[in-house]
Length: 291
Image 1 (cartoon, rainbow, N blue to C red):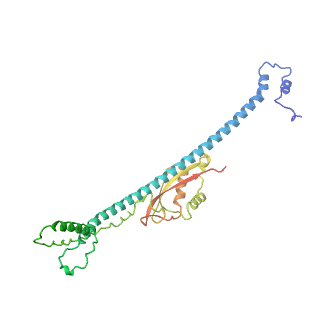
Image 2 (image 1 turned 60 degrees about the horizontal axis):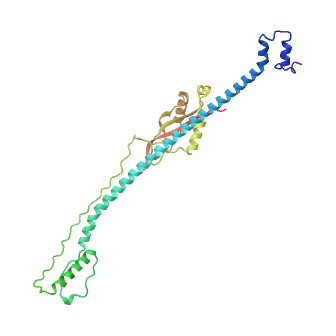
Image 3 (image 1 turned 90 degrees about the vertical axis):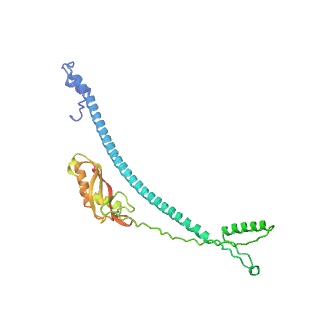
């Protein structure tokens, strides 16, 4: 019987206030209580949905910011490598130009040495004219022919043989090639020719971090999640050196990320000019609560 009675119906309200003063105010409040309860419940649901949307929106925004920071850092490293390569190419071009400038005087001297020596021989011994092998010899032959045609109308009294050009001493110039500069022992590079590599690649690195990371209880209770970005030095031996947080999430999460990074196994060290060197390595560590 009690289960079949609707306590919010008008009939029940009239039954309760039968023979009582209905203008007192309680009667009106009892009539509108069902509507007020429905409106309140609706606003609670709307508020809960709005809080969930805000929470997920902020989480996605933080993930997007972390991704943008990582892409900007990678882009900066790539630009640094490209600038270093362009500087090396420009130095090689300058060396080639210097070598060409040094070779030009040697080629001129060789051309001067190839000038044919003039000698007077009897007509009986002349069999055929010598072959012209260079542009200088050809020009001299043309000039000699013009002089002979101009002197046919006159009488040549004295014939003086022209002196042969004196040999020019060729001085060899040795080009000193600078040896590659040795890499400083304790210098830490931000980008090198061959970056450090974790055994198994980036996927193995992320899997190792996820399996060894423990979510801080305080951060878990406060609902803190997101990404913190950690930078650490991969030494020339492949071990992890200095560790620092460049983008913080919370003190507990930062300390946990540093702890996991310090326990990483050895990397394949980075190389510059074929030598292992110390290199900064950037790594995002994600903390995400499970629903």
